[in-house]
Length: 374
Ligand SMILES: Nc1ncnc2c1ncn2[C@@H]1O[C@H](COP(=O)(O)OP(=O)(O)O)[C@@H](O)[C@H]1O
Ligand SMILES: N[C@@H](CCC(=O)OP(=O)(O)O)C(=O)O
Image (cartoon, rainbow, N blue to C red; front, side, top):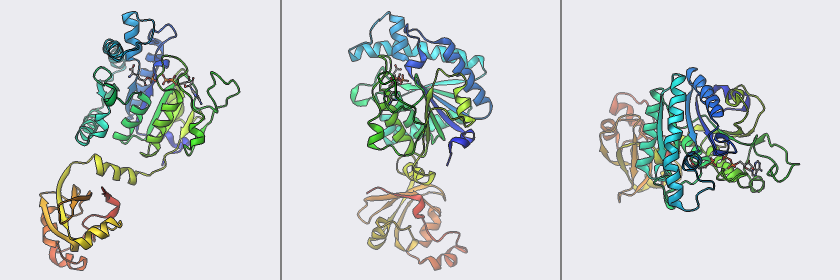
């Protein structure tokens, strides 16, 4: 697992930049700041890193273009501002990234894209394909269509969801502040920076206040929500100041800046989550009652308990495990293809070699590659 000193090894990095960093106090875009960030990210992409940028600022840019002095109060006004501003944002990024030889793609997401299984898989596939093509996805919430119940609501959370969807190594949240402080420094000048958070306890959460300006959306509260998603997805998260030149490069060189949140789970657990919600299902096996009980207790799936095989899956595909009544209790990665599973179903493990002329695996699905759905 990555530590502060080994952050340079991070290959897939999500960088989130907030409205407060992207705009001046006048409400206009901070073009120099944006250009510096784009240059830095482009350089990382040139080094072979996969970069995803989650950017706020649509509402702020739209407000400026529409001459609105105050943040819109109604949802349709906010959406109208975002619709105007998103185009401005994208135009700016597209132009700047192109100058540094990078191709960008606009990706607008809503809550549905992370909770609905097929949309989740779809967003993942699109993002992964873009990354494989060397494209920098420039991501924002789809503010224009997202009504309240479909809304993620803040880009801190969105960035953590994206980091989780693409299984990023690192999420960097750039804000107008150096990191998490012992209290909101805007109101408490004695507050000090917390360099590392190993556990997001209620006491840590109590330190976080709301946004410092009316431009920001969630302040530190949503950043801690994001940190929870990240650390539970095996992603290291760092909050740092976007105003600091070369901040991403410095973070990757292990410099002691910002607040780092260390992940709690390893890749294996993350993969299990993936199995549950991300993977494409290629087939199913039905198991007998004894096998069902064993699986529910956390055992691997053995050939002996299988009573039927459905589909034409290959070794390495994700398949469902069904009870005799057809209820799905788990899914996992098959060690044998469908034809071989049919040959060995009902057989004891020590009979597999005779039936197949070899026994590469004891289990049809190892418990490490299985996730229970009940
Ligand atoms: N404990 C805390 N430590 C640091 N900042 C805090 C804390 N509590 C509240 N804040 C506020 O959170 C702000 C950053 O969040 P926000 O305004 O939403 O910016 P962004 O646009 O980057 O998301 C800081 O400027 C600060 O005023
Ligand atoms: N999606 C919105 C930003 C939402 C948001 O979380 O803003 P911020 O707190 O500045 O990161 C926009 O583009 O205006």
